[in-house]
Image (tube, rainbow, N blue to C red):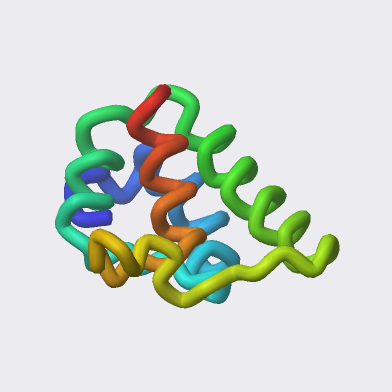
Length: 91
């Protein structure tokens, strides 16, 4: 992400986990997610890993993973995106 220096631990973690998270539907271009990531990097690796594990668990257990799991409020965010955002926000 642009707000982490190229040689930071946060950038290293982002580069490691971003491809998997993007393949699960996380949109790192979303301003709200970027704000959450910029505001709190404590527990960042745990948040990345938890989001990946949870989405894979949902898939393995045949739980629906909807492209927009919040259609009543119409955020347009994928479930993976919302899980990651919540994980980063709570850390």
